[in-house]
Image (tube, rainbow, N blue to C red; front, side, top):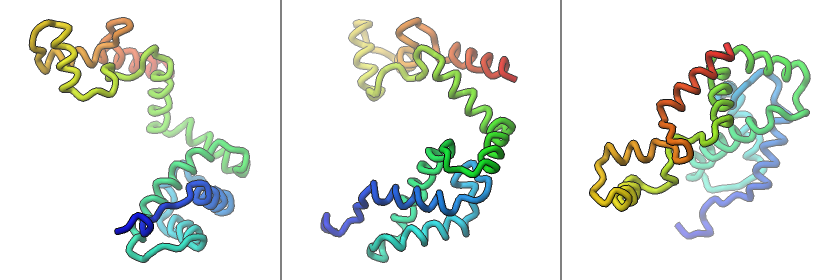
Length: 176
């Protein structure tokens, strides 16, 4: 397939059309895109598709891209002022009472509060590179266990991922 035959949407136009569809058609309490009925999502896609032309063989790929981008856009928009007050109030109630959402919110809060939230402290280097770096530091061949401990220990305070997990659980228990 030549490069000119590929579907390369203008992200701004696509996103603007998605935003308009959400503003026009969001009329129920949906905390996430996946909570929207399949028929409703199909209607949103059909309305959006009226603005674009593509080859029929790209339908499935474009639908997957649409669903992914629409999901992200809806999440970005849920806290905006465009929401009807009754739906916004119901969303706040859902966010405060749903255990799964509450757990994710508290986890994210603890992560943001920690000095170094990631358990992987070896940057984005592959495990082989981390082993090579550790071998240089030790002046001997590093084992996988040593490399795991090295990449799961915070460099600033030598805190391990396990102690981070304990701190996270303590934060969640305190908030209940």
